Length: 246
Ligand code: SAM
Image (cartoon, rainbow, N blue to C red; front, side, top):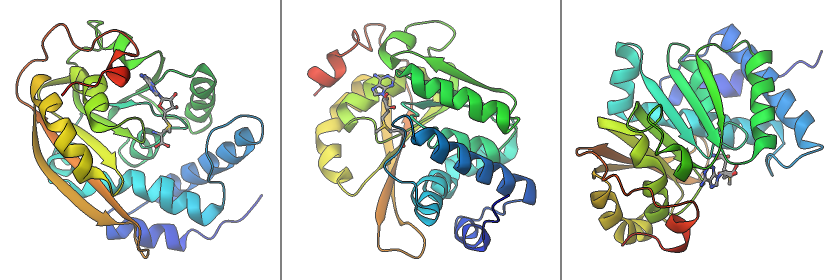
């Protein structure tokens, strides 16, 4: 069995006020091993170096704990969260490991990635979590998913105008969409603002943060859903990317 030095992971998570238990650390290490193993025969991530995965995938996924709307709700009890375009499980799987009471849905349009995620869920013995294979545009119209979630999160899937159309329809009125963004968020905001309003959202805040002990900047965009999304959205698969709302 490989022994990983996880002190640094603990330290970096504490910067976001998250104290990982031994059991949670073990789950993250099992996840890391599956990620590297499956990545040797399918495309899951460009990052496989241990320290880089810890920082850019695991710790970054947990950064949402800095957002008080999320922190307060997750502490107060059971909440539901959907991760749109989860890929190899980011940020959904790290969040599920740390907040086991949360009801989590992982959605992706690539079935190979869903198979990987099902294996991770089984190996890590995660409960109250489901994977869904499909495009967000198709699933968002179904009553089991539409306006059913307290939180929707998404990282590295599309620019804001397109992404809001894929994500906001899943959020309950009064819930939140939190978008993980790189440094270019301000440019995306000017183009995406109108789309957010059309879909029933209100941009409340942008949290800029550095990945711990690095000079890499990231942003979390906090959007509250204040009105139901008009029924005609999302438009059919592919349209939000081809003709972003503006
Ligand atoms: N969120 C992960 C991360 O941060 O590492 C994965 C990012 S990856 C660049 C984008 C993922 O979004 C891919 O796995 C892709 O299959 C998925 N995706 C893109 N468009 C989608 C859509 N319309 N509906 C569902 N999944 C989508």
